[in-house]
Length: 266
Length: 309
Image (cartoon, rainbow over the protein chains, first blue to last red):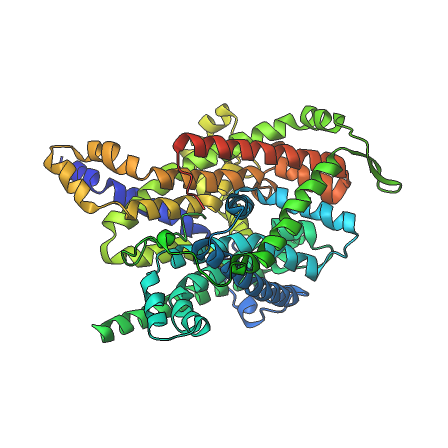
């Protein structure tokens, strides 16, 4: 009876932790199999421990080339989407203008559309225009689908901003540009940063839209897709694990810094 | 992703709607909007028009295509590929329900029961995103391998007998069956369910739970009458954010499934990139788009949450 009650009281916690396990299991497998020394071309079965892939992460042809291409595209797409998206977000929150509903739907629709539809329709556009598929078409597509996410992230932050802060700045004789640079932008910065981070992650990991519009250009997800057919090198797992660790370290460092800052303020 | 980034207001700021219109720079909003909106019009809206036009063209790759208002392409596409359409709806629907069932406890745990572990669990939910989703989907090939522990355990417990009787697995295998595809879809889109659920649960005032308890509601009644209704915005955006991408996905069906688990996305991809039958592919994609738009509109109307953006 006691055990049953203990179990009942913690049902939500147990179910939640099981879900968390389900979410993390593939990452654990990816990490463990980055130390594998597989027999055949595919890295799906455990053979024996080896650190070969970790000491030679670029040992597979084209792998690191595709990785650096993906990083470049993600960087430019983030820059483009963040600048354009932030401008739209400010216009939406701060100004009245005509056709507001149309603008809102145009921003919402890319997020409510299966990727394959956007990918296919963009390809018909490029085919009709006779555009050369490659770096530029990928970049155009990535800026397009990242834009809406940046707008929502920045909009949320700007909306929660107290407009009296800007009025105060103006009362203190700050010009419009000075107000924007020294008051508005610093307050909106966390929203812009969140939007940029999201855009980077979305662009770096995008496969479906890239697959349609890349031509023969190979980004990192395209390389992984190809290797699922030809044979999966262990180095893929090494890069997957490294990205995971770098991301977690970044977030933890950010948390430590903000904790310290809060403590200093207190 | 709509409500995910939609962080709760940090300070009780007055709504900025009541601000007086600015005297100077009446054109400023249009200049701010112009580049981004132009980008979306040219590379999102215009392609939809091109796609619609391609779907009613006839011709061949060599001689070029011409618009002939050949609507029969649509009938042929539906007649040939209705099983893939049904499968997409069934797989994506099942995955969405599973995501809700699996994701709700975790979102609830993070919002109300995690205490000082809250941030850590949130990071663990988001962190897998940073490993390419293709790599993580391939990991399911290892987890569900024929000789692996999962299939072994399911076999010993005779679960696989039941599932193959239901037709979602075949024999002793899980890989290359509908179960594997749904499992992969559920896994891939689970965070898109958890984050909006968490955002809406976190906004609920904890004192409401106390009030319900004071009024002699048992925990389950409190959940049914207070917590769940208040989390409806999260449920709505979570199910949309899971169902929409899942219905168009072809990665899971390709990597974890077989030729019997092909979804609409797979057909569109092969028609477009391998067979190069552009009108059929465009027609299929157009039908998928129309279907999704209908679902989204109905769903949002019915549940009354129109502030998704």
